[in-house]
Image (cartoon, rainbow, N blue to C red; front, top):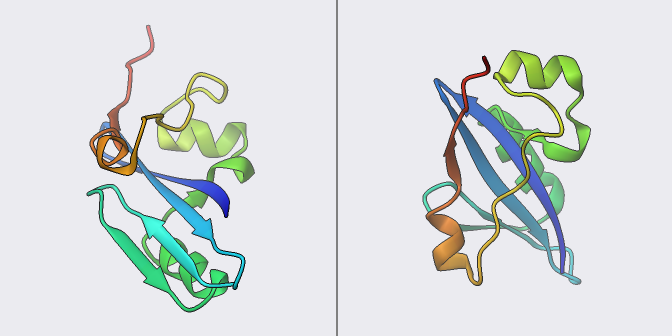
Length: 98
């Protein structure tokens, strides 16, 4: 399975989502609430993420990061031993810069 991370900001929080594409071409998104949403294709999943104002993390540049309230290179997608634990880490407070 191929995974990509997506990111949005909401107030003083970063909100993550993980897009997984299965070998058959179907896709699923692990959302910030820990729910797994299934889609018929990667394109449909990407469209849903874009509609929800997420951006692909690997496509974010310095100006995107500034607009979202963080410094590029100072954040990484959440990590956990499983999806249940990961679901609890999908919303992260933004650290205020000095």
